[in-house]
Image: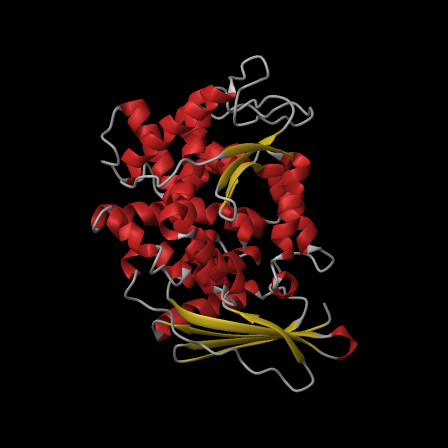
Length: 417
């Protein structure tokens, strides 16, 4: 969805702080405060000319890190929280399959049956975004909020996050993020969309963290791999993010999918860059993006291992199909975790993914049916997922049928929500 092209400040901010400061004690229960990206407070705010010079300086720094030159300066502007809210609402209006996504998430057990997905997105993103780059206008916007941040305490930390967003502007000028955005918006494959998002955010995340390395440790630009594995970063980031009430209260799915493009995407970008043709190999991804979260999780599978084309199972005639989609390795892993499977077991069970497709339909009296077919790399991989899925469904409230034949696993689940 278009929202993912915005800066999720909390994730990027925590990544900076994870490498620069020890975790703080839990904050006292006071009103949450925010920090405008331009200026630490009103007394320290600089002139517009000074900010413009800083933008040009950061653009030059980014050009050296990313081995690309800006075609034109990036205009910057400030927006109010109300303007941000309007922007998010318009972005959600363009999410033509938002209603279908809500149906799928409920059928898969990711959100409560009474949840309003649009309202959940609004509550989650409106509180987390402090700035964003808009491919429609080519502008970098910062959100003006009252108060100070207890976390971002220096201009250098602010500039690292600005570099993250300027990387979106740089890649947009060369590769047109609007084209990728159109593919996401029109996609009926959420897994492929997540892979594209991981290229965009992973690119910016890798550059931002390397900018920090160059500044703090004097490394040559981009001469080292991603500073830590995605797993290690995730563990550290959660220590920071859990201090934020809006983050803690969001559905697990939102939190995991919000971090995936940044952390796993960043590790993917750096591994491909280091092991292959440098930034040229990353530039190629904007024209030939990864096709699945499997390729993001396992960079050695990009681009050769193409996801299998799997058709969704047919629904019984008494059910009218409401949506169909592809889950992919990342979402299957989250689905297993959501239903009580240990993370390590879920990771192993999802790793042999070859392709999948599910359909959700409704029948008389509001009855709902989920029909899901997945194909795995080997019969052993299929058996491993089948066993994990049976454990996940052990306490299911609705009837289900789970079967495996060779490399294929089928799940049917039906009943009233």
